[in-house]
Length: 85
Image 1 (cartoon, helix red, strand yellow):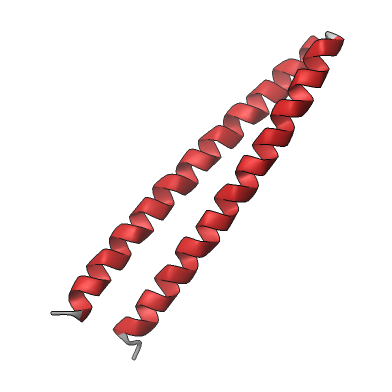
Image 2 (cartoon, rainbow, N blue to C red; image 1 turned 90 degrees about the horizontal axis):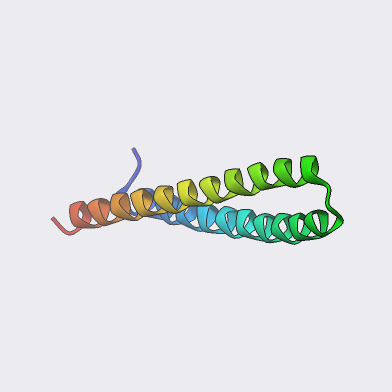
């Protein structure tokens, strides 16, 4: 049977993993934005449009990761309350 401490440890590991993932997504978004600027300066409209869609999807993914982290933090708080009950 799993203990509350084990559950807290797993939740903390998940929070860390999601934070790292969000950082990676943000780095990719920054690179995409840089590339988008370069492509736009060359006047390549089709590539610009596609990169802009990709950038928007990365922003959405980052927001989802932030929401997931918030939910995991809520879960951690609930488990901590259970631990101290």
